[in-house]
Image (cartoon, rainbow, N blue to C red; front, side, top):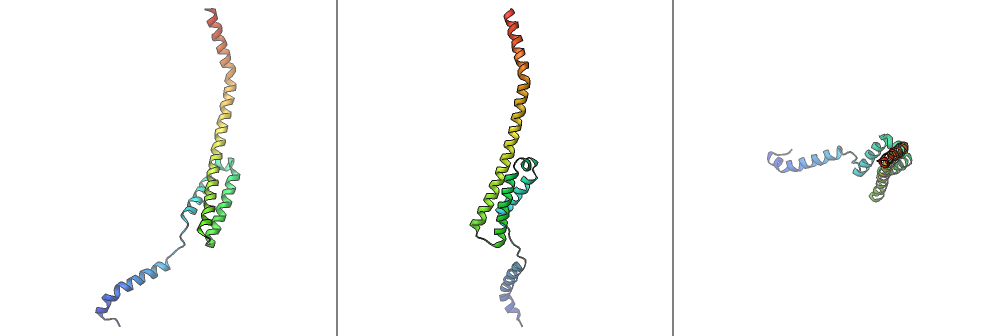
Length: 137
């Protein structure tokens, strides 16, 4: 049995041991922060209709790289290899966003060119009319 005087000496050790054991029993698998960022970025890209429509191949490649990264994480692979696939996934996601934006700009240019072509005869007619009016004076 522990005597009252001994308790003061043992109390810090008992509390430390209890804290350490409690920490072990409640430990959950800590995720790789960049893997979490890559997952979130992929989900955002996947939900973006512009990206899904205009960059499906890049999204597929991003998903593949992300799947490899997740498998490496679960298997406890070396950080360097895991980081490589996380990086690849994030780059593919960025490329998908850029491709979607590029396609959007192309469509805007096509609309502007069509509008220009539609208005060109009107502009020429007005210039011709303006030129005829100036020569009459």
